[in-house]
Each structure stands twice: as C-alpha cells, then as structure tokens.
Image 1: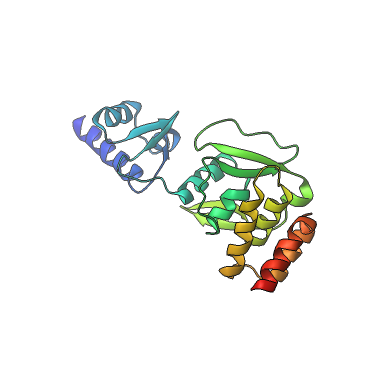
Image 2: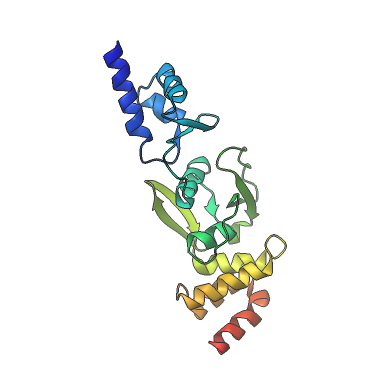
Length: 206
C-alpha cells in the first residue's frame, strides 16, 4: 500500500515537474488518486491555482506557457492583439489577460484560468494571417506580425493607438515584417487608412 502510494507520489511529481500548470484531469488520466493529490497539496509538493489546476511551487509561469494553456481551453481561438504583439517580441507590455480572437457567432468561452479577453472578428478578418506555433507541445494559433499590427490599427477603440505605432516601429526596426507585407495586411484587414500615415512616416524617416 505504502509502496503504491509512494509510486503515485513519484508519478505525480514527474507529471508536475517542468510544467507551469497541470490539470486535475491529466493527473486522473495517469492513474493518480484524489487522495494522493490531496496529500501532495497538504505537503506543499503542489499548489492549487484554480479549480482543477495545479502548479509546481518551484516553477514560474511564463507567457508562452500561458498561451499554450489558453489554446487548450479555446482550440479555435487565435492569439491576437497585444498578446500576439508580445509573443512576437514587439512590445514590453504584458497584458493581464490573454487576447483571443474568435468568430462573430462562436460561443464565448467560460471564465477560467488563465484569464482571457475575447475579441470577435468578422470571418474575413478571423482567417487572415493565422500561424501555427508549437508551445509546450500544444498547437497554438497566433496571428502573424503584419496581421497583428493591422488589427491593432483597425481596433483603435480597444487598444491605444500608441501601442499600434510602437508595434509597427518595432516590426520594422527588427525586420520581422517589411513595409510591403505590413501594407498588404493593412489593406486586407481594413486598416490601411488608419495605418498609412504612420507607415509612410516611419519608412521615409528610416
């Protein structure tokens, strides 16, 4: 009995180690008993960070792990706006909630962890510029650099214009998108009129 319990404790530690977040369902699927989970909580081997969500107390939740967790919760959602800008390394801002784009008629995800900020895109904008990235073994949909900048300019009521301009300047400076790619994305994404003066100014000054 004690050997089995020890074995489960070791299994639990192995499952949690190296992961910022582990779900109760993952532990149950691995055969970890509820009593083992509770003892691990009592002993401080793991901590509870939300309903059915546990964490290694020695781990740090990094931003990319958070994106992977969001992708698990909202498989069809696309990391967008400021969160996509941060993923591409184009802003120092780290939003408290992860921005996720979904379709205009999609079901809104229930609240949970990590917290998300949902933005609804029309279908023609939703499917543009989607990239697939593997993060912590999870397939995560993220908008491209050029598409993200276009979205920021188009949705000026949601995000301050200074954030869009910062992202545009950083993308050009870091050569993560060239002016032609950005202009094409802006035209396709309904943002060309808003973006054009900034792009021209930065390009001419560059």
